[in-house]
Length: 558
RNA sequence: GGGCCCGUGGCUUAGCUAGGAUAAAGCACCGGCCUUCUAAGCCGGGGAUCGCGGGUUCGAAUCCCGCCGGGUCCGCCA
Image (cartoon, rainbow, N blue to C red; front, side, top):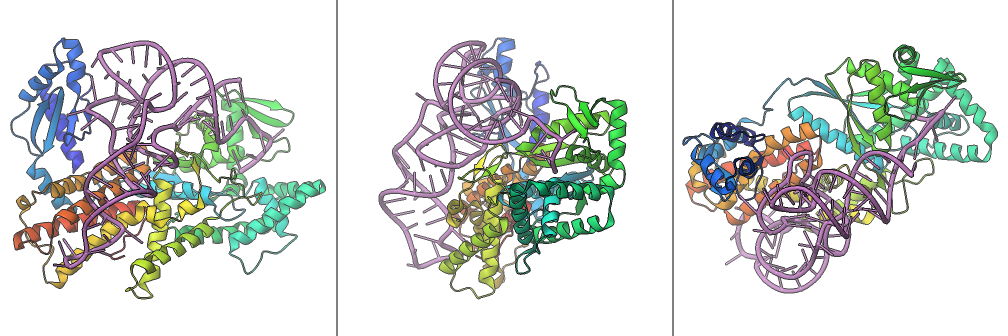
């Protein structure tokens, strides 16, 4: 609803500024008003008048009657706008009718995220990728896009060849989760290769045979990749993350799509021969990009070109969630795709997660697996539930612990800007009390609790109510906060900054808690009770929606 | 060496793209609030030369230049 308020402010401000020349309306969010404009400052310069005077003049030229705006005031040089009663009313009404996207059918977006190598379990670094990607997918869906999520499976890299080679020498441990069993073999194989360089040839032969499509080799690869992915999918499921499609790199080599890309680049790009290898010179990038190895096999970047060309034909926009290490690659990708007349993907690049002891590495066995973290955080959450809610039964306790644990984990990973490097601290990650997610979940549970008690008393929440009775600051502020949900979704859908959702969720919960503290609902007189119950219901709906966007479950009690 | 990113109370961060009103939160610390809808909550308090130095501007955490500290990339790896 806030989007519509802002649109109206823009409209009337433009009218009031008809006699002025201005570049921008300079509409800003402000703590002194529901929305404000600072345009008087810049007009002051060109018109050589005091900003205060100009602000007053503009306010005098605003239309007297508006729908969503109650009034506007010039406070010194600032022009402050305030929402109307009708705005508050419409906000609650819209929420009760269901939070539908303002715009629909905005086109198809394919978002690629996670895409961890199939050589072991997901670790905490992959988690950041997966959670950012998953939340963006949820935001874009709500913003009215048709979204498909893809996991790009690297089955052609040297890493996988090493794992396949290792699997030929030792079996996967049967008593371990599949992806962990693959990691054990992969780590052991790496160690062996370091000690015995004569085995390296065997690995390279596997790579050549796989690309050539040798049946027996393909089957060996498939076993390793599928084994690992089975485990990875289990982990993702626990985190409430689902991919619509798993796409194997190898398919693009065997279908001839990679060769087609190489041939086309030879015609359209600045390609030169270095021995038998092919190098592509890209504009603005000093280093040439190798598009074909001397031995004729393909490289990651070339396969990625074929993958993106394929994707581009299936959607209107492509979004790739990448770690910071892929930044140069993404620039090369964009430039090479331009040569092929393929639209560029949009990149969401996040800085790394490292351990206090240094960077993460599956090969060196230096990582914390997502499974281990999930396990421990759910245990911690369970202890917390036991401590606080001993009255709950044996089914509910672990259920709530799972919601709280996973919620805390997801919230933690998304709350900081993707630009920020994270040094992972296990103790800190497990400190449930400090987390943002339980705070938001708790507010939701409180709202549900009031509604349950009301239902038990036979008070219906869809009773007709008089909005004019909601006059307390905490009530008005809460409604305004609720109105900003659509504004937030629209904003994040365009700037792709998912941490803003986490911030909003926390603030919304805070406003609800204040309302809860200052405005008794069930013990209020009948008319106030009806109006406040409607507000509680709206708060519950938005809290549950914002949690859903974060991929966090909203418990009805905790 | 070059490119990109980060540097905000003791700790973790928001704000920076489009410069504006006393720099905003959480954690930690100190002090209050459970006979009223869940205290995973609420209220109050102390604590910041926004890395450093210049510049632009009526106005800079925000824009520009330089420096310092951290991260990351610069593979016929992925």
